[in-house]
Length: 314
Image (cartoon, rainbow, N blue to C red; front, side, top):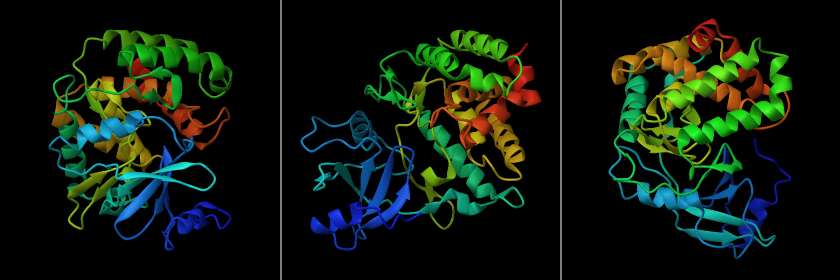
């Protein structure tokens, strides 16, 4: 939604972009159109003018732009410093439409071409293992600067699990039975996955972040950094199935349909997908606030699902 009081377009106009306007909101930044060819990203915690070297996400994207991928990723063209001191990242305007245009939330129908595009995307990420292709920069996980990708992925998620339970466990306990048992089982599950071969994970594959052409062929993947890491690829599968439709009337059916597709395409265990859903629900419930907001309610509902509980509470 356009905020008429937003001062950024006027400040961009003063920098020589008279047609600048707000374009979209991602997990990590607001995006402004500068012209037909370029956009500018304003990170949630915008760096001040004269900030130091490239941010970790920028270093990762530079590496990804050197890989062969069946889709484009953002590239850094330069920086813009607003009169108020905030710094924006200037990038090419990636073309395409949301893959969500090929999904009807009212009926729950997902175009088979969109299903195949998601499989192609997940397959491509699996071709970028560490350390042969990518040197992972030190990224905060779920926006928490104390838990980063410098740590092994499973240990980092265990630390988040402990921290989020300590801080927000009381709130979750009011909505989810046997919370302590769920936490203990998820912690043990993460320990059991420590030695799994890791691949690159985007961490937020949802319709807004996947662009396709009019024939539903992949064109670009946006908004890296929220949960981007080298991790067990089943985690990405679990999140992709769950994030595609989180709040629609057929959300659960769509989640299960995509999970079925991914089980067949990648030969993974359905129970592991469900366990990773529980892990994310525990660490991500209060990713945006310390309240029972909409995302919290979605995570709590995941933890109440009978199939998730059966997989976790063996």
